[in-house]
Figure 1 (cartoon, rainbow, N blue to C red):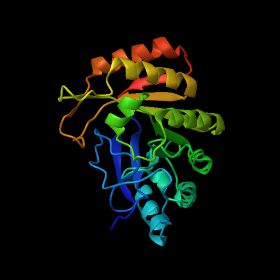
Figure 2: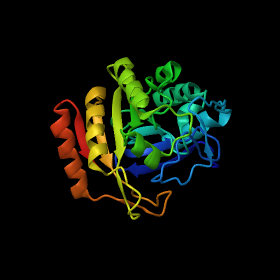
Figure 3: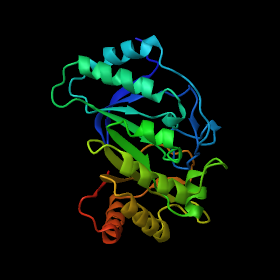
Figure 4: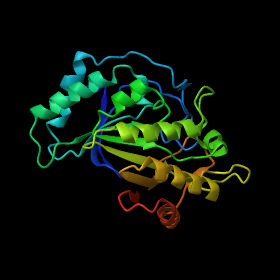
Length: 264
């Protein structure tokens, strides 16, 4: 069977057995061009205001059902992969079909959660937060909290709001999201082989990030690093010891037992 929308299922470090759903175009389209991106350099960097319409074809329901029926132990159906999925105006059309297909099938344990990956840049828009909050688990990326680190690590489109505005929008999302849905903050840290290039694994960024997370009050914080080939040659992963050190700094600043912080 030719697959247009789905990939996997695969064993995710953070989500367990997960089926990916790609609702973007065939080339990578994103508001960022992150140096550490494991999908590679962004083909088309766009403004967070950019939108395109690509509704699901009749193939999506059939493809999804044909895959899911073989994986009754699936844990997540994850929207993301080839860029920023919230740029697609029809994201809720895909979500509706996924919900319907999930209800038609039998599951070994719990039903798989409908999960969304976002780089958080479009959350400044009310209509985007309204769509995003309908997913059962939202994984919002936030791995920088300073202007310099934002520019170096994420390399955003020039029309992208300041990192402070993005943090404010994640705070709003957490307040607006239904109680039964969850928000996780993804923090990817990396090192740099280039002495003149400062990675986001620096004390100032980590501390400011901790204060931002303290404001957001997410359900979960995920600390991780690169596990595949990054977009730029000079990027390499931090080790588990450093991840534990970052968690210690976070805990000292956040001081909230309700926020779970884990490394992967």
